[in-house]
Image 1 (cartoon, rainbow, N blue to C red):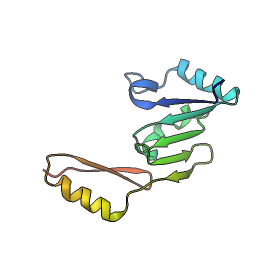
Image 2: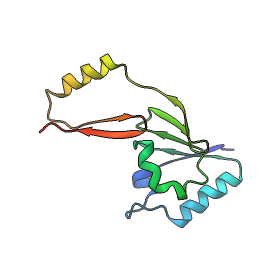
Image 3: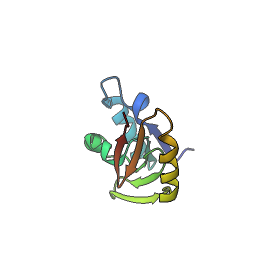
Amino acid sequence: MYKMITLDMDGTLLNSDKLISDACKEAMHQADLQNKYVVIATGRAISELEDYRKDFDDVSYVIGESGAVLYDWKKQCVVMKDCFEISDVEKIYALSKKQDIMIQWFKNGNAYVYEDQ
């Protein structure tokens, strides 16, 4: 028997209007009633989920920021995070400057984008 249901946001949980359907909300609620962990796995920053707060009453955890953060949604706190060392960030940044790419990073639950034009 399963103990957890994990859902991606974009293209899975969210419909084309970026909303969570009533059927999905009910399924998450039923899983929670059966003592299952309802987990959201997303590349989004934790702060980007605020618009869905009212829809996440039954969410236990969020695996966010492209897997770098495990967030306890019910307690509203970081359980675990895995971050790059600043020296590695500096190397990645230097290498990225040689390419025509957009850089996105996460810090303290927020997403930032740097695009050198």
